[in-house]
Length: 368
Image (cartoon, rainbow, N blue to C red):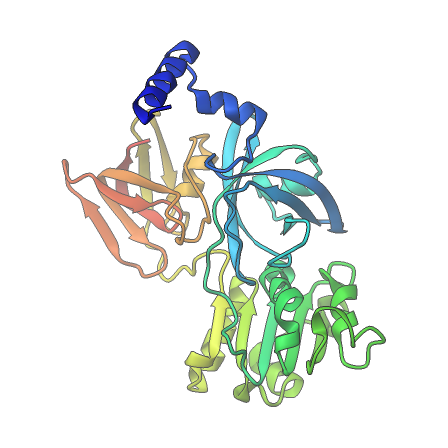
């Protein structure tokens, strides 16, 4: 059939289907098809610890795969509102079943993480996805000596690397920090990779890998201070390429330690939240379309202040990477929490800002 005739039939079908278009009906029958907005269907939810779950997802046919260490944005509908969050991928890169996994640890007041850990995202549910992104990855060829330092849920991107690339790494030391052994994610699996383990000759560690695991638990070992403890724990850390992921305090300490040693190029960090350099004085935020004004201090991201006030805020990674939180600043001033830099909008300027990494600096009017 000529393309013009096909176009005519398509327009007719669209008119008959109004207010929906034919693609909307296709989504009802095959939401994971090629050409559709990228979605995934939840296959299973498995508890790793009492406050962490692994969610297994079958992505749509538009999924382009990932590199170990990368993350995806996932859109989850909660009480009729879609919330976007970024989580590291913990699965194999080319699984025979085509499934991907994310592992989520509940955080205080974390709407999506607590929703997942509570088991409210049930098998069969459709979620929205973005393609994988992020540069917290291993190079090819792999370094001769590797150091992983992780804490809490910071283990997740490194777990993706271990499951996919451990056989490529000749000499690995992995320091993982958690409050207790019971809270340590993937502990049994990581122990199985270690040198001397009965299963250390099979699985993803097959090959010349020497994997040494150093587990530190706050309840039995006390607080781990990299500045104080790293020389004793990993005497040759200066000779290794390092990947570090975890709470802000751990990352700040690592960056200072490596910078002091003149080894900044050997350190790779992954942050779940931006580092706050300068807070400022704060002020009043007015959300124009919602006709709501709130007072916020100079360390609270506009995104958090808006959500606390009940505003439906666009968001994504919440750390300044994905630009899913961009809005228009109509008037006023905001401060970048990473750099302390001020952005000032005069009436009519209509500047775009990211709400997850900016705080109010005096007053600001936001077009939301």
